Image 1 (cartoon, each protein chain N blue to C red):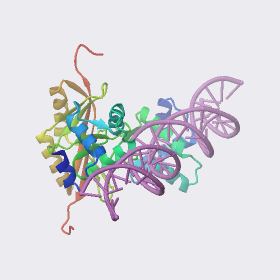
Image 2 (image 1 turned 180 degrees about the horizontal axis):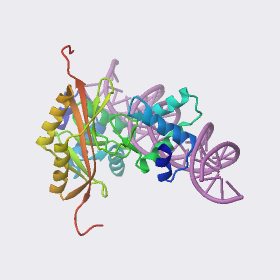
Image 3 (image 1 turned 90 degrees about the vertical axis):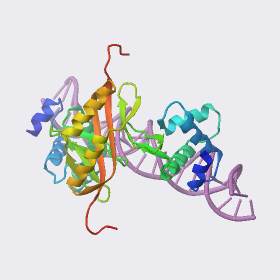
Image 4 (image 1 turned 30 degrees about the horizontal axis):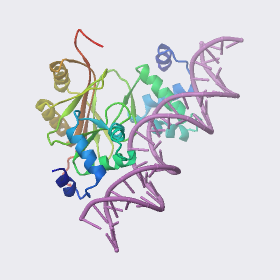
Length: 137
Length: 137
DNA sequence: CTCAGTGCAAACTATTTGCAGATTT
DNA sequence: AAATCTGCAAATAGTTTGCACTGAG
């Protein structure tokens, strides 16, 4: 079904695109940096260049297959678009990313926008957190 | 009282720092890009370089005088730290920035973090909006 | 066969840094 | 005078683009 997604997006089915899509779908993490994907591809000796990774991710983003986040720090973070919107908790110590969804906050955002005579088009909410626990690194 | 703030931050009182602080305090906007500040300084023929603008803003940030935001788009946005935390609505058409504060969302964030066994260290919430008006496209 | 897609290197943008001279204390 | 600060140019980091070649349809 990967191929269908690409076709639907008007993109030719090429090795780099399939490879990256597969990677996004099957890896044990959901959040990737372009450089991170590139490194994995290098390890697999795929011969896919960093520029292509960026191009493919950008195309996927336009096609709605992927969502791009701008957390703190320089790099963009990409994740497969599973359809259900969510926000993120970023562990400031480890960089771990956790997803969450809170309907109360979602609703609140809409009414805040409305109160200011605006229509909510998009939003970004990120919680930067530290673990609470006795055993830390 | 500008000078006091600088002294307290352990920063020498220099022309660039005073100029930038004054600019941040007295301008009719509250949100600035480093480049934007630099352009104003150029117009005033102040002879202050872009590198210095960045250095000063970074120092101000460390000193807590200024807050840095990473909205969509490449550049960082800086604003004077007035103490009261707030989030932002960004008008995606005009770039206008509006501040808001919502206690319900603030509380919700804290409990979400807690639910995931995290302590909220910082957070960033930005609503990207469009004006509501009778004449729409 | 045609045109989109690719790799590579070079270009770009935002930001940082090294250094020698200028300023603050 | 000592130490910090500054301007400039060069360096960096992330991302994008031009171009000749490769590969999908």
